[in-house]
Image (cartoon, rainbow over all chains, first blue to last red; front, side):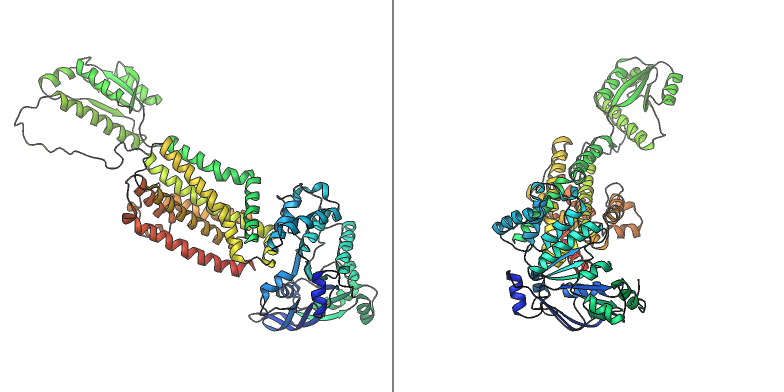
Length: 260
Length: 369
């Protein structure tokens, strides 16, 4: 799954090889090993599903890759930056969105865009230009001065996703982005994800919806801090001899010790 | 720097779009200062008095005139008999009765001394004592002016009291500094802790932490707007105190404002500290209220004198920031003191601000991530 690099972020990332690399990445909290020597690579423009039951270590792994948490051992790079030595530089090159959408409800659509643009150090002129383009693309031009709190959930979600991409990051981390959203809105949201991936943005997504796992290029499944399976959805189903991702997941997660 | 300015602008949006914040910020101080200044006063103004005058002489008239022109007492009833007086007290009409016995004026003229009876409603003992003291003082003064004491009438010791700094014993002198200390602390600490807790609750804090913005600018960006608004708040309370409640401003205004800024800083860092431990806005609000409101009310010397407290409580009161700020406020405004006399309190506040800031930043690093 490689796309012609058509923006700066993707160009930078693909020139340097894989966008995310992990070798034996480990995080211990005292005696507890939250993440136990995980290794994988994610290519530019790939949609990488990061699955696992609650308590399997997904969040800890993701926090390390976002530069929020220092790893104990191993090595990892994100967008060419070392997780150990340059956690702050990583933050320039990644976007992040969680289930909570992370927009300010008491700010208007435009103010939210301007704020996050400013936080990522974009120039005022660039912010203005991107705001117009973004609103046009999402069909939100008429709502630009509406408070985000009064927008429907689906719109908030799309807006949050677009805002997270405003600074053209090489990777976007999506932490259960579609939790609590109806299937139609979810489907529309995935259209946005595909669009972004087609532009060369690497998508790193966690989800509990197995139908969404099917949409990913490759899927990893974490159990007790280790990655127990990593392949394309079709490959995984073949490997475990089952018909759906649901069964793959259940098959692996049943053996888990650390379940919340 | 640009991201920092954006952040501050965003904070102002939050503040000006939330009527509750504005109400706490500006409504509460005005309401409380007015309340404490006017309603909750323990001074005596126009207390209702009944007069029972069996004398009807010139001196009795004169004494009454003095009493009612003092501003402390107001004539409510002209009683004609003791049962009248008793009835007035039972109905709660009057707080004090003054009884001039038959021959009061004659005795004063001829014997040089006479007796007046003061009857007070002691179900409210503080008021009763004050009323009796005020009335006694007025009557004494009259007596001294109108009797020519024969020379060599024996040695007398006379206590002449002079009430320094607040000769009128105005309650506002205590209430305004106390309220100011309380309000600035509560408003600053509560609002900052709530606003940070809100970002945690809505998940926006997570996004900020993943962004290139560092923690220190985030915290300063949170503090700065409230720093400015709390300062405006302080100015409003000061203006109310000086122009509406007649508190003097005898010391240096610059010093007063500088000390106020220092105190606000202490309050804001307390708010940040609370917010790093509170996961929700409710928790932040309750924690601020419980950990700041009561200790400040009780242990700052605002309502109850610290000197008469048991030693353990006195010791605890030393960590209450308001205690020092109240001393500073009274020192500058009422006594006209300068930094030379107030450096100790100032140093304590500065130490608190620095210590709390370090503590808050440390706590933030561990807890937000």
